[in-house]
Length: 137
Image (cartoon, rainbow, N blue to C red; front, side, top):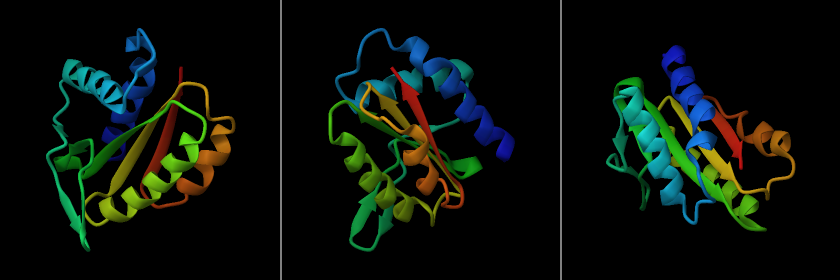
């Protein structure tokens, strides 16, 4: 399963920046590009179809690979202050996803607002099965 997780991570890392012809205005635009990459590669995924109830909240990952128990969540860092919001969103998502998925990949497309990539990733990636990928514009 680690191999499949690395494959998903690799195709995003290798191709996302290349398919971005202009700065995305929304997270959905980034999700659409990632979905195109998944389709071209013939990966078996679902987009925003797997709801996960947790307490009184309902979580829906952007992409899921059910057979592999992997969730992929996309974030767009497009303004000052967004980095801190993304950290809060990721922490909430980890709680919601960990009961249903063994591994979670957070893909952050950064338009130049994240200054210290290593610092952002380090604490979050201490969580078991969590990886953060930051793609710079």
